[in-house]
Length: 155
Image 1 (spheres, rainbow, N blue to C red):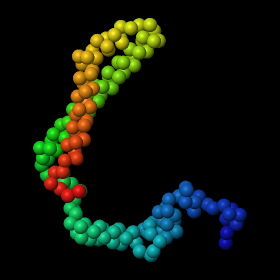
Image 2: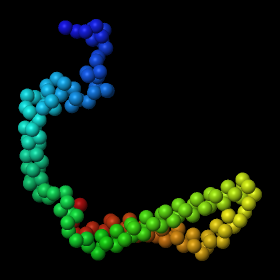
Image 3: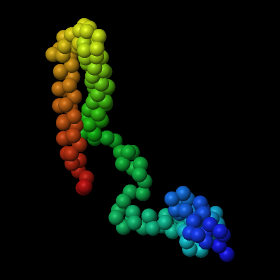
């Protein structure tokens, strides 16, 4: 028997796919232990999925643990890439600080007719800021190139 709203084509919140997920709708329809439309319990479905995953990994000779690759000692190339990543991270935040310094100097010059902050920025440009920017760009390209070097594994 249909309720008054269902007779005119309005669906309930529990049946609305935009409000209630399919898993929630299936749980309402079949009970808490089932998330599939068939009559099997959730534990059986998950057991079948685990068996399928194990068979898939065995067929393709895939490691059974996602942590196996992390257990191995990093190669020299990986250590260099990690070090470059650390240097690039610190250098990035230093460059952001320089950018804020530049913006503050530009606001001071054009908004308050005060040029001391932008002149200090210009004085440090050749000595400090430009070398850091150049180093950052060079290390970025070097790191990208090193990450593309094959390390004995098939892609």
